Length: 174
Image 1: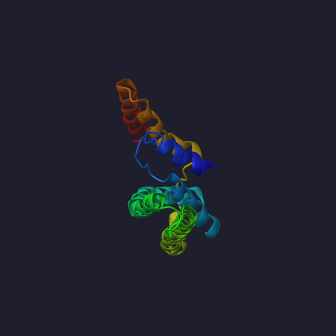
Image 2: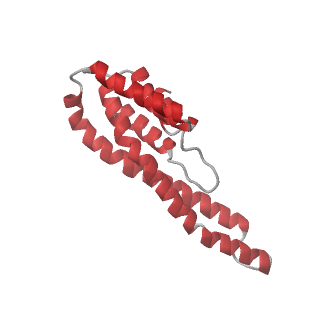
Image 3: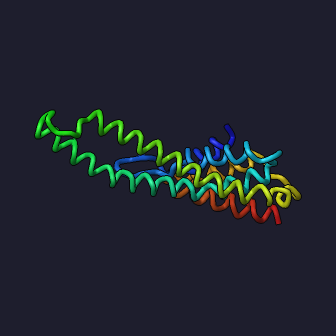
């Protein structure tokens, strides 16, 4: 639940409107949760590093989705042809829908596997090296992710307050 809150807060500013394909926070979340479930005794430092490592996967998922939608234009053209020629054409809507669902399932499954396996292979041997030192907490990570929520306000005063808070936070830790 905490990882889901992190990704939702982070990309709150990038809401889907029109033809915009937002970053796929669900891909980042499922990869994060799967890798954490496969690691022996993950701590918060490992979790935080994994959250950061999976951020680009959301953009990769959006890019793959854009490519798939472009590819689906061919199916749309087949549907229009079927509609104009009647039921005698070999491409029926049921067949096109089943084909699209199968392709989407296989595409997402292999994308997920291609994202999880390298991260798991890299983090398993490196995990003992990460566990020493101060551990972040979920509230700390939510505050960082809350930048997306502040950016969603689209107000200069909110941006200024966020910038001042960031500077004061950095100065306080020094």
